[in-house]
Every structure is written in C-alpha cells, then in structure tokens.
Image (cartoon, rainbow, N blue to C red; front, side, top):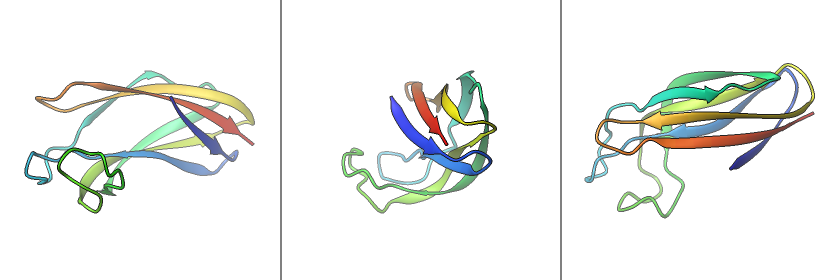
Length: 104
C-alpha cells in the first residue's frame, strides 16, 4: 500500500506510470481504471513526461523517461481517505495500486 499526505483543496501528485520496452524505449501509455474511488477527494489523470527513479526497474535504470500516465488526488475535506486503481498495458500483467491518504 502506498501512503500519501494531502492538504484540503491542493492537488497532490500520487504516482507516475511509464511503460518501457525491453530496450528501454518508450511504449504505449498504460490504461488506468479506478476500482475504488476516494471518499473525500477526487482523482485526475494526465499524460506527462515520467522519469524513472527506481534503481530496480529491470534493465532500465534511473533516468530513463517518456510520456506516461500521472495520477493526482485532490481532497475536499480533512480526514483519512483511500482509493484503489489498476494500471494495464497490452502484453503485461495488470497491477493494482492501493493508496491511503492522510488529509489535513
């Protein structure tokens, strides 16, 4: 589970998703499906340049980048929130992301 902190009324970047081929070349954008929406916030998705920072991303090390899908959260009230979404790309397994949010 991913945990983030957010402030009421301010958009918070949750995570950027990028698909790279075996040769670390940019692939098609992944598809996002919300499987459990947030209770006290909203989600938005944008296409932006995403740069890898994880050193354990197969053969594609930190610094590789390309157009990706970036998820943003915006709270409408203070409290605890959570949501879940799935990312899928042709030929790859679907991944589920569960996010817990502490909103101030």
